[in-house]
Image (cartoon, rainbow, N blue to C red; front, side, top):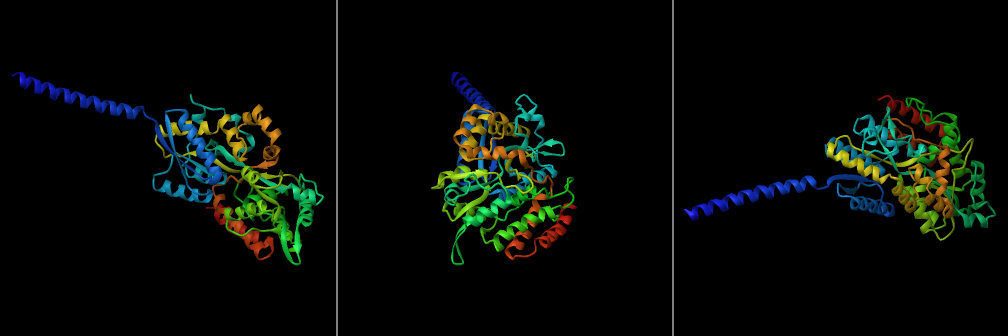
Length: 429
């Protein structure tokens, strides 16, 4: 009898321990961090800075664990995100280029962030830099938070400008840009050995020249093309003149960001004196160059002007509630004052909060590194990229027609009229 009771006791204890172990397992699972996936588009040194920030976030608390996954450049990430949404396996947070915000928001796949910002774990929406918020809203909803934000800048080799007897602060107008490029270009017979100016024939830089000339890309309601109007055609004529008439501007070969890489390489290797590229390239170019790098506003025509660019952080509406709460904590942390100061200083991207710009730390940094403040100062003349669901597709059409016009030295007006004809079909889908 005693033996039987002993066996029963052991069996009961084993059952109890198993139940307790199961409970402990469930409790551990429930108390563990919520895991979320974050897709990003910064490679190279910029990607390393971002990865370090994600690591800092993960180590700063035990409620959320972020898995950061590189998805290629902005174009590649856009396509992968579309595919993942269709397949119902989208990430919880993604970086998306600002011109893509309206496209995704129009399809209802971006979470409205207003309730999170106003909740117990909220943030001050008004503290985000006003000039960077134009591509953060869609139909009255706040759907994207500025993160790695930029404007195009004119980069100059100050040593070359000084040697040529030019103002090392760089040209201030289109006409001065032409004159500087003429003086800085060097030739050996008919062979150019050093270009005065170089820029990728890219939609972003074209937008800047259109804004400087008082033009528009689309009508205010986003329904009609405006880029074939005289103010928006003149920038392409200007580029054509620099390339074919003056022979002082190089159009770097390559598709999309490959062309940007060529321009930056030429600048570092002193094959060109001046280039257009993003403020996000500032740290890299400053570190790589063996000469004094200067930055300046994009030269004006009727006025100064530049598009804002870079990427915002978005939360996918397809995520479960718990993951959304975790995603918001991550987005909020990544864009808080301390983190945006750190990110800006390590990359050249602009701080996204006014409190960061106004901080004593950034004021001291700008005093020591004035190049880093140029993009912030240029924001007073900046405009958002067109807020239209169709613009992500439409920009490809515009860019291809402009490139075709320049490569073949054809009439810019005809090229942009052709693009406008195609645009009407896209805008009226």
